[in-house]
Image 1 (cartoon, rainbow, N blue to C red):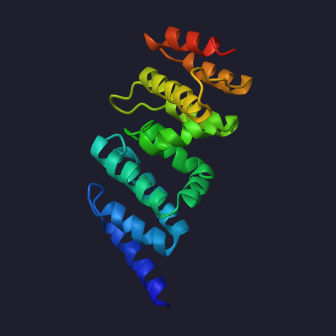
Image 2: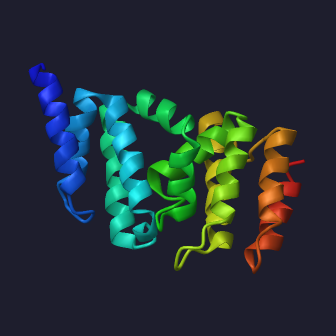
Image 3: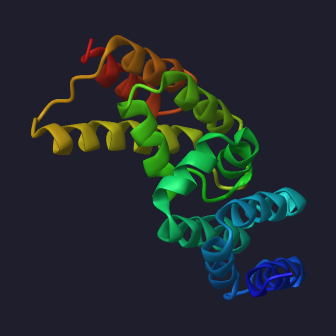
Length: 196
């Protein structure tokens, strides 16, 4: 067994015993990703899966989802996006189970899918978001955040004051805006319809 392999298995064992709140978690994942990115990603999904009932706790979710997301992305953003994009399990855990759904990296990931017209992939994630029942998760305000981010990102990228989305993009946003219950619904539906 090589020194690299020994280090990999030592990191896996250390992560297996790590507390979910441990400040060392992102560092350990960063080290494992530098050693073997695929193993680090799989270990992340494994830890989120075995701790899925605790992902609704803000502190756990911030550490295990957000901080590890950043550690893996910092190691290789391209590899992370590829692995995450191909893992419905990871997507469901992040967007449906985490208290940190629709924040920071995971929010940008979704917005970029919508703007890249990857409608099926974005639709799956929006389905998970609409099923998120974690405490203090407000679907209406999260959809408002997503739609505003899609609009502002588009405008910043294209140097325009008004976004110009294609029909599939607007229909996707409209479908999930119509599921909102509460004050954001009419305003967001109207803003999306104005783009058509």
